[in-house]
Structure formats: C-alpha cells, structure tokens
Length: 464
Image (tube, rainbow, N blue to C red):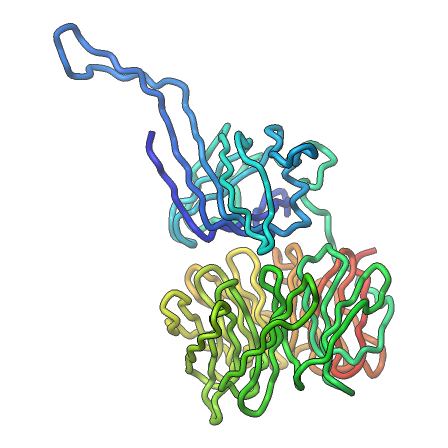
C-alpha cells in the first residue's frame, strides 16, 4: 500500500452540469487534511528453492482515503445523509472527489462513487469538524494538468439519488426584475450563505450601524451602533469583519455572529481602509499610506499582531484564492501576493482595475472605465485572457453565483449579468430613479440584493 496523495487546504465543492460538462466549481467549504492510498493486493509467486519473486499477479484493486479538519457551509450538511440517531455518516451517501497536488499545474486525479466507511459528525463552536472520515473509492481516473474544474470528456459522475439536493442546479438569473426596496441608507452588504435567511448591512448616516436583516420577513431583526465610516465587510467562520475608512488609523471591527455583538476593534495605520478580506487566521485591510502608496495591513486574529505590506497606489479590492491574494490598483492593475511569504510576486497591468470575483480557474475584474469594462484573468498563468464591454461600465461592486457574474454600476443604478461560460452579457437592469451607485451585491435564493449609496436596499428577482 502506498500513499499517493496528502494535501491541505483542500476545497469542498458541489457539482453542476454546464453545457453537458460536469463541473466542480461551486465552493462550499474546505478541509485542512486529506489523504489517499492505493492497494494493489498483488499475489506473489516463488519458485522452489528460490527466495526471489518470479511473478506477481494483480489482485483486487483498492483505494481508500481520509478527510479531516473540515469546514463546510452548514446548509450543505444535508448532502451527507446523516443518520438522525447518532449523527454518523450514512454509507449509502455517494460523492465525488477531485485531487490535485498543487494549483493548476500538477496531475489531477478524479475519484467517483466514493462512500464513507467511518466517521461521526460533531460540530464544535468554531465550526471546524475535528474527526477523521474514512472512505472507499469505487473508481478513479487521471486527467490533464490544468483542468482542475472539469471532469474528463464523457465522464458521468455519481451525483446522488434522483430528487436529492446533490443534483446540479438549473439556476439562471435572467430576466432581472426589480421587486421591492427598503430605505435603510445601506453602504455595504455581507452574506454567509446564498441560501440562508440573513444578510448583514452597514450604513453611516444618520448614525453608523450594523444590522442583521432577515430575508423571509424583509426586515431588520437586530442592530448595533459602530465606529464611523463603515465600508466593506467579509465573513470567516462565525465572525463578521467590518472595515472603517478613516483619514488615518482606519479600524477593523470583529462581530460574533452567534450573539451579533462586536468583540474586538483593531486600529491600524492604514489611510482610508475600505477593502477587507480574511482567511480564518488573518484579516487584511486595504487602503493606502498617508501619501500615494497602497498599503495592506495584515492583522492576526488570535492576538491582533499587525504587519504592513506596501506597493502600487491605492488598494481598491482584495480577494483570496488558495494561497494567494489578488489586489486591484486602479493605476497599476492587479497585484498577486503570496500569503505564505506575505510579499508581492507579480503585477498584471490592467488600467482601471477595481472589483474582483473568482470562479473556477479564472479571476474576473470589473473596471472603473467605460471600455472595456470586465476582464478575465487565467489564474494558472496570471495572464489576461480577454476583456469585454458591457452595456454599462465604471463598475464598483460584483458578486458571483453558479457561473454568473453580476457587476454594479457607479452612477445611475444599473446592474449587468454575465454568463461566465460564454463570457458575454446576458441581461441587465436599471434600478428606480435616485437609486444611484450600486455599492454592493449579494445573492439569496432567486433574488439579488443591492445597496445603493446612502439610499436603498433593493431586492431584484432573478429569472422568470
């Protein structure tokens, strides 16, 4: 028996079918320990009076593995078919795995029709599942390096019994129809899960607050006052992190989502820190120095230790994919930061770069210029693939849902939907008069929510 794969920071994805191809590209969790072993069960034959093996005959082929230290969006736990009696994993639950030793350029191994053999789920307060889950694999296939999001041609995966939520989605966002509005003067939005019942809102006028908004009743259920100038937010585990753009000493507020109360406020030496990202260990706040140099402050969540990284000009947006963070800079383009060494390792010149979204093996950049206004970057080579010009430009907000990109316009309220498989605009919508500057976007079920600066929270129906 030999161990052929041992990895960390593995992605847990849900599968879907697009254009007849089965894709594993909708990330719903991650695992920090995963291993895979193959046993050939060779039968060895010897000649009389000869200590050397003269022949081997392959026996029953066996693949086993284990998965541990996992975090999965709680909405998707029902896919595991847990036994109601003791929380153990049902051996009839089937799933597929994609394993790749390093991003984009290593061999890819597909394991399909896997079944759990051992494991009991108990979810601690921090959300990480500590137990190991052993599984067996009934089939495997190797594939071409660099195709980490696609199964081999003709491959038919086992995606669970008919009628289960493991079946791929038929989600399609067009037409987009304006549905309703709430006057909360929202700045920015955050969401833990595109299918749960809550979004988080902040605003700065007349008095800065953060609120928990319940979708099913279209109302705020709780809120609290915060430091002035709240801006972008991100969620890691059970915590919400809020940036505060101040003219020097910008702050970051940590909020416990269980109690919905602020637990920690960090003060940094970032000026106008409006962009934020987190990875569970660190929070990253992006802005600039007191001059015209871009600055990112990395805050260690456990003790508040801070380390600055400076390059380029003003930091517009931050987005983490694997072990790298991508940073937009209007004047210089997109920077690539190695999170292990916390250094900038590359820059892709792309004038007007603003919003960042990730889907599959590509990064999508909304540009704050008229034409072109959305660009596609290949993450494996960090090169520009192509750019398109949508009906509207000057994009300042974006979100991705199941193969579709939504971009929000900086001006009269307009939102564009882009099919990422064809990389073309498929529909757009104009918000009511006065709903200007689409600051942020989140999707919930069949609805898209947008915040327009100092104005409205708009609810937009997606699809017919």
